[in-house]
Length: 221
Image 1 (cartoon, rainbow, N blue to C red):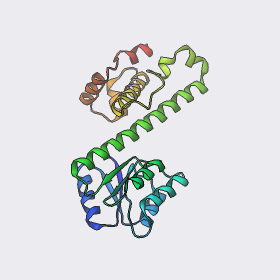
Image 2: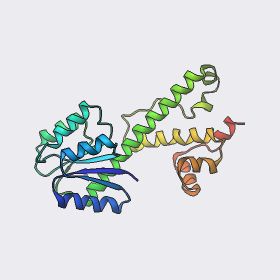
Image 3: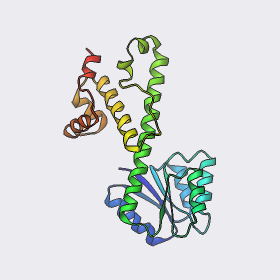
Image 4: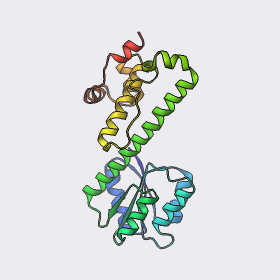
């Protein structure tokens, strides 16, 4: 589950969002103003931020700009407001916010938007990790990479980030599991341990993604 920072000057909103997100299994940190949000972000990087636009000390859009300028906007941020104009929402998205929630926030809309934000971040991280692995493998052993690209980077491909979220996530997850299957010689037990999934869930996931379970064994034969 995720570590989510909720930034809102209204105690009732903070308590409500905290209760809902805690019930979903997330860890929730609370900030009642921009100063507290800055302090938390300087100490740690949350997995996602729910950021109110209108706050008494510094508004959310200004804080978003600060994080962007300082290179700290490397997590999904969802803006919230009950009074923001369309122009304000557009500005926030342009700066780097991922989505906008209008107050009063419904339970269904909150959970769906948070889930989408976290899913997109997982895709981004998977892409970065996968590309780093390919680059490291090629730099370390160009000959081996050329001779057996499948063994180094199963499912190697250029991922299209313009795809719908579900399709992009499936592509990255397939490459992710094929990579671990190759590294672990096709051992489902070790792959389950590496990925943190139960074997039953892992089998179901691999079947859903269309992963060839014999690929890892062939690569290590």
